[in-house]
Image (cartoon, rainbow, N blue to C red; front, side, top):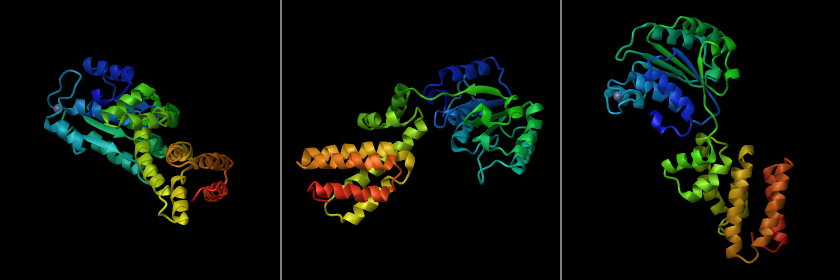
Length: 300
Ligand SMILES: [Zn+2]
């Protein structure tokens, strides 16, 4: 990861690059913004640049052993603090503080990234304050969180705040193209990704699963009970309903082209969706869907 790998966020990245160039980096940063828009990637890119053995002005070199170690997550002067049991506890903060207090092993700096810093417990945050107030000269702490307000104010006030915003549809398209997605996949994902590349990637995987399941749904070799189970699986998560509906509607439209009686399916699907909106359990809504389709004389 490097700053050039980031999609969008140019203002924030330029701010960081300017600080690197002028050698005026702060000891503590708070990268805040929605999920999946590049905060963690930017934190790792900054760490890589600072630990790199042959940096080129604002860029890390890429092939040096420090850069490779950062890529593999094994650099001894970098700690990526992850959430354990839904929080970052005081013992872990104390351990990090002890680690930070020792001079760097290989580089000139030590970098610690707190991913999901909003999960730092109150006691742990108060302990962290001490280090934020008097950081060792080699220390760089990057807190990554969804919002400034999700961090204890006394902690947030000691960090330089770098905002990360939702990506525009064009930026999302660019990001998905870099991941070698097809145009048709990109078009179906972007409207549902809420400006988050992370969400888009998650959707891509889910959509592939749903498309496979929906293929199964239209397989007449399958028993009806199997197909009910498939649809139930598709609609498991409430937040997925809208785009699942879109994927299924698309499959049904394809079926309409193949079969003359497909239009009843669209009617039945509309009723199915209204039932979901009214919080009818997906299983009951599915049974009604089959009933309607059978009434319309479609073989299911
Ligand atoms: Zn390097």
